[in-house]
Length: 422
Image 1 (tube, rainbow, N blue to C red):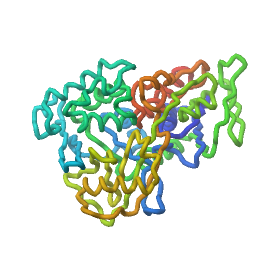
Image 2: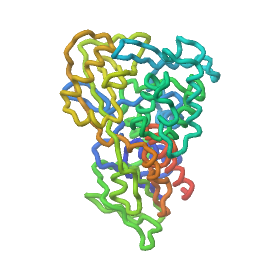
Image 3: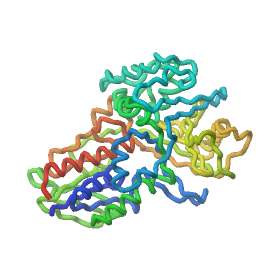
Image 4: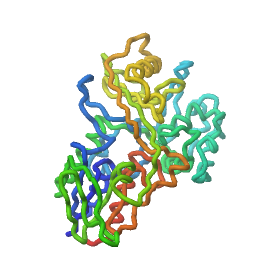
């Protein structure tokens, strides 16, 4: 049986490996780190003495690829969220609070209820999202969604920046439409906000590794790929050169490179991936006591401060700031002070000093999802017959999120299944 060699055990690589293994194919998965998951993982932090996620990820119940993946590895019930969609916000400048609450059904009658909308907005304002379907690859978010409108600062901007990890005035509007269409556009049942109950690794990574091992896949860590050997006519990959080993491929073998964009560009000639990347800053605080959230709130949008989203899990409150180029340049102490002030206001903690905290900076969290960068998203298939590409930076048609990464891995796996017989 031919083997598919998957290099990169982030979400794209894991998804490809799971899909191929489920189809009965022989898989070997490699990663340069000592663990899988890439940026989607959990770890024990000695400062907080808690398991924390490398970065916070908000998912929606309409993320089809995510839930198909979780169903396969048996952890679909490990994501939690409200029974009905609820997006809570707090403006830390004024203290104003509101909750956007779409109804469960397909017809969006919720927009006609003032207590379910953003304060100051009318039902007509919400249909401005339909303009996104006409966005081309050159259009930015603020060219489609009015930055002076009543929904922009209090709803569209925080959602757009968190999804695209790019300032709205620079972000490609066309990437927002599939998100709106596949979640909010399918009614409330597809737009429930979900987070990992106990951590990203417990939901997405460790069960996937267990599934792969159970189904006879091989996994090799600390395997850093140096370059790819091609045949004389460059029609097939003939070998993979790792830092500590050289692997010669059989003629019927396949390769999926599920690596970050810069690494792919380094090891593979002829690929020009997106160059510009944007950082995400996460700060994790351990409180003295567990927050008793109102209405089972486990995340909260922050308007007018440094923090953008708060995630609550037990006695840990985590802050996420996307497109955080300026914030990432500050020291950890400065970041802690800036974000703790927002937390204290948003959670009504009064005047208190910051508790123990851990700052995690992902300086290249995603590629900058601008109209210019979209031109460099690579296709799954390459000019080399047995070589496929995966990663959230590839041309999935959706943003660089967990959903996008899993879709890219699925696409690469489908391409292998299409081109080869077991």
